[in-house]
Image (cartoon, rainbow, N blue to C red; front, side):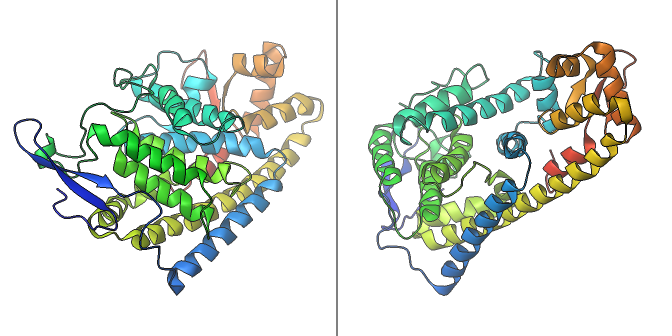
Length: 386
């Protein structure tokens, strides 16, 4: 439990609600005061992060269709971010749910699918609205709609106390602001997000994420929405051309340090430690995404050469190969529908790619089979257990 708090970060307020009194934390408005100390280490991390983001943008321009790369990376992020919250759905299960019309997927898959929908919705709305409290609430509605958290006031800031860890606020690991402080805190965060922050919009996104997680304004979905907030802020600030930067893998791999860095902000006012951790993640994740883009380009070129050798079967097989970069799990019916060809033509194209070692049958069924583009998915999943 947080028993002391740095005046730089905020204040603890005693609450006498429930069987035992407890201390809730109310953060100071951003930016940090006193301001961040930009030592050599922080300066180098900012430079490295910006350079790696530039390389990522450049690498995606080499791809014939960068939107396909984005399509799969959003789904990877959805699975990872949801796994941090305890869901068990895999990337393959999400693809099966989406691509093959599996409407009876278990609840975890629905939650991951909602994350994708919330991401897509937010990115579209950013073209019309600033990154505002209104938009945050709208995104939250999409995130929880029809899921196990659907009864926890989707799209509404909480009107009761919540806490993290423990069985009640008095023994919790961390207690966010009381309900009556949520709206003032979120109003200040909205002002900060939409104000100019020098020297770096990249730093702004990191500060905003930590502040959002500290406020914990909803009854459910705070972790997932807080991670989305990083991407939305970077897109709104034009730091990245495409929403390709997702930190859930980094936060999952360094979960203990992630929570400790946030605790150190609240307890000690150590914003510098948090920002250095965050920037290291920006560098690592953008470098991994750049390498993935290059590997996908190499894979696409190699497999295109193989497919071009198929003679009369090449035209439909080539279209199927292109389709696999968006939909790497297919069946004969889904292929026929997507390519607008007959079932026998779709089956022939799938068989051709299976013989070339591009597709693998993964259902184990004699009928209603489906096939996976393993080599592509292994690039997307690299470094993660999804």
